[in-house]
Image (cartoon, rainbow, N blue to C red; front, side, top):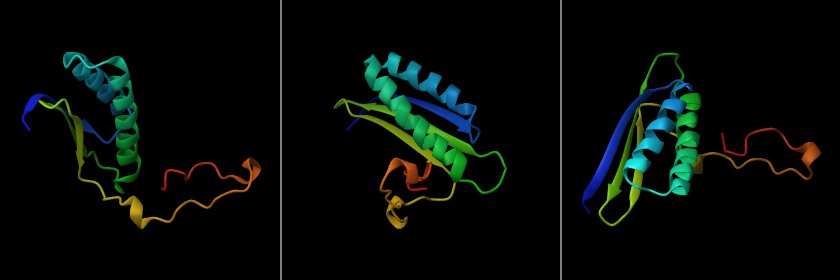
Length: 114
């Protein structure tokens, strides 16, 4: 399938960069004439993924690059490709969270398998 439109962005592993990424993503979606709900849902997913990369993929405190590429294919398939040099994460290699019997016994966090 041929790419009919694409946009690229490079950010750094700093949470403040999420705002710049969101603006880029919304502008790119607008340029592709995508509906607002698609843009908003894509932004939510991208924010979750990139925030996890920023928070967990690097053990040092050095500035690292994160590359994003948004592609619209001729068959109307939209892809967001996120590349980083951080530690890989495989959710199938982690233990599931411990279930709780009621809300008072529930721990905060950990339901994202990290």
